[in-house]
Image (tube, rainbow, N blue to C red; front, side, top):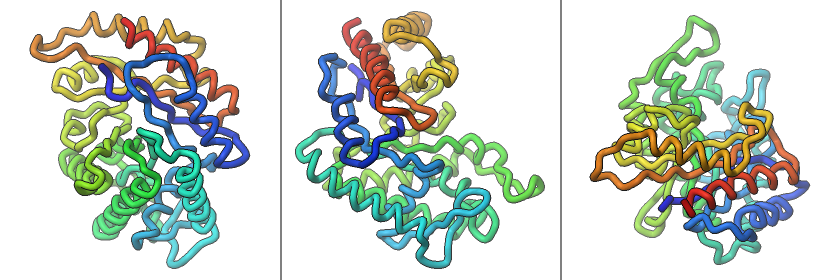
Length: 323
């Protein structure tokens, strides 16, 4: 039996948060397919390019994290309050109010956040990526972890999707303001920082039921030690098989049409997963692996396109549950 069945990682063009939350609920819960478990209901994400970084920063601001502002290359740490952050702080408070009103009593609410390494590689500090300044990066990542935990407590989120897609870049070669400014972080050190962040997000005994899924854009063995209950993967390859054989559940990204995976039906997706299971050889002591599915929109989607993607992935999860 899968952990989550499936969930959404999409941004939609709804006019307001109430409409977006209602539509997400219809796509995820008000349906007939049985996927064997209760799928997480993802809270709406900002449609601003790079908005997830600002959404995560807005969570950290409430516990002393830095304010951000936009500049020519993206986002940078500001010396004081900014209009950019004011907008996202307002969105954070409105989303908390909408969740309390519309999702009271709902199980398995999912919050999407940016991980510390992706945040540190994306946000600039004094003209350089934040993670180049180790003391500043440590302080900011600690504030982000506490801020995310507090926000999850406020909205009743029991699942957190950590977007850490720049993890391979940080552990490979991260280029700074110029091509001559680079840094590389040892995988073990990077995994320890991720483990600390996830531990903060999960929190104390009061929120012991919270689970974290990690989308790192890679399948390094060190990810199994981060504390995430599931690792999100791009492909079902041999590296993924080794993760599963080591006892790490995985979730497969199913991208929207137009992003390299065009025209596949729910039956096509289910057949590919089942066919891959049969090719993999696992230790007989391990249970049969179950792959969760993630409906991924690589761009801002219309409500109709998001509903169609959800229908396809939800149907594939139902087929996998029955077979």
